[in-house]
Structure formats: structure tokens, C-alpha cells
Length: 229
Image (cartoon, rainbow, N blue to C red; front, side, top):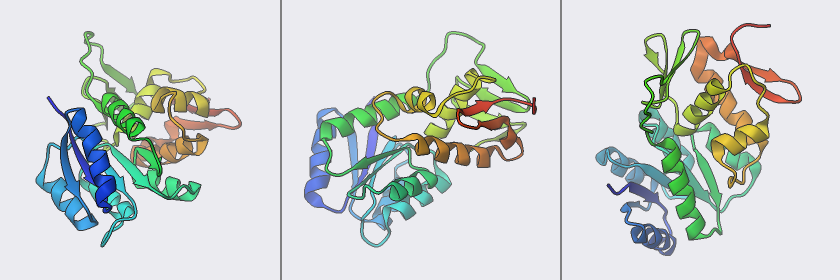
């Protein structure tokens, strides 16, 4: 079944370029040229699998659109912008973006990024029945790609879930930022270590009373562990 992409871009030629590349790959395309239209299209199309979101769009910027989408969905979001400053990228990640692509870019690379992100966020059918990772009251369901504390389901973005699953599978091990980047974001990801720090911060916030299980190991990275020893 074809995946559906919402492309939010106010420049017609850029939007058409992106659309044409994805149509060649048999994706279903939904378009929006401004923020309010993007929100309307997203709410009217529950089958959208991923959002490509330009930041500099009319009426409501991409940051606001990202924030509003995150209030109702964990769909993967790639932010697309001419801005390349580090602080702009960090703001996007803090609001829930999963990837950040800076213009000018190769459409082929964008297609590859989308495919990789969809693959990582899709549900993998496991042959083993042992698909629950339990750490105290935290349960990570690798079959459903979900996590809960007690009876409360955590509202995680795909990248936050991937990070939690990887750290859970490697609990009690010190994981460097480079290791987390390579194994969660992929070896072809061009971000830096602060991307990891931003996502760790957001993950801790969502873990709430169990945020203490993610420990900072000074000068080395992070470790997921119960207890203070």
C-alpha cells in the first residue's frame, strides 16, 4: 500500500519538484501552501504517514504547525527550510520534528530520508512472543512500537520511541552520543550530538516520574538504568 505524504511548501516550483519526485516513487501526495491549510488537510486526512514541512510559510509558520500536529499525532515530521542555524534546528527538534533538511537539497536525498524515517517508524512484525521490555513500571512494546508507565501510554514521537527502545535494549550500558546518533538516527544522518541531548530532554519530560532512569554519564553519554548505584 502506498504511503501518503503531506507536503507543506508555499513556493509552487519547490512544492511541484518535491511532489514530482515522490509521485515517481508511487507516494500519495497532499499539498498545502500555508499553515492553516496544512492543519486543515492533516485533520481531514487521517491516513497521512509523514509530513514534509517548510518553516517559512504564510499565516502560520512551520514551527507552529509542527507544534499543533504534535498535540494530536506522532506522525513523522521532516522540517524543510533555508535556515541552517543550529538554534533553529534545536527549536524544531524541541517542538517534535524528527528530521531537519536545509535548502538547497537533493530531492533524491529527501526521498531517501523519508523512506528511512518511514521504515524506522513502521511496526515491525516480530516472530518472537517476547516483545515486551520491562524496566520497573515502564513497559516498551516492540511489537506495537509503544510504551507505557503503569496504565498510562506515553505519547512519543517516532524518534523518541526509537531512542527509548534502543536504550531499553541496551540498559545498564553507557551509550555515547555518537552511538545513539548512529543507531537511532542512522549512519547517513548529518546532525550533531546536540540532537541527542534535545531528544533525551524531551524523553525525560514524557517519562515524568520515571525520568530518573535516564542517567547522564559525564563526558561519556547516557545510560538507562533503575537505581542510583
